[in-house]
Image (tube, rainbow, N blue to C red; front, side):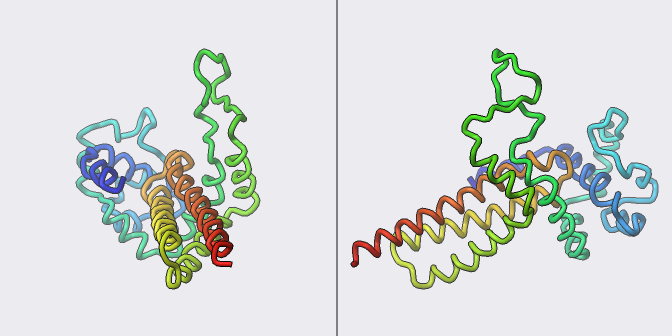
Length: 233
């Protein structure tokens, strides 16, 4: 999976990556900037780019549809510049991630994507409620307590690292995989939140899957510990 992800990233066209940076820059970073001129300079932009603040790459009048302009934009900007920008402004980075946890992570089932077959003749965006109990539960929890997932990840990392020191055999393997899944989930959250700005709820799909996987593995570890304890008794 990691190899496939790396291959996908390396083979992605520069124009596609430039569209993502366009969205991130002009519809996420600069609109709430206290100093747009300085931030634009850090991101490789000039004062002439400031009128684009508030736009995204898919508007019909966006300059991103002009291949020559997008190519020049791609050469002036990079995700390395974006990463350095976030590192120079850690509070804004945390605020951005917190905002996406509050407003985007709770939409585990994007409303604009129906999951009915066309022959069902349902209206656009219709979602079935079958087999949706888990998604519905975590949607309610995320809306009521957006940072609950942060608490869960902190618990997984702290308890997982502590339990790994004394675990053996199957239990140790489960803990290692749980920590790996949590790491991948955290990285996916940061990428979806800090490297793009459109349809963030849909881009958080892998984050939700890795989060669910850590919960499943935690249950497996607990049941295995109980079973091993009963056998020893």
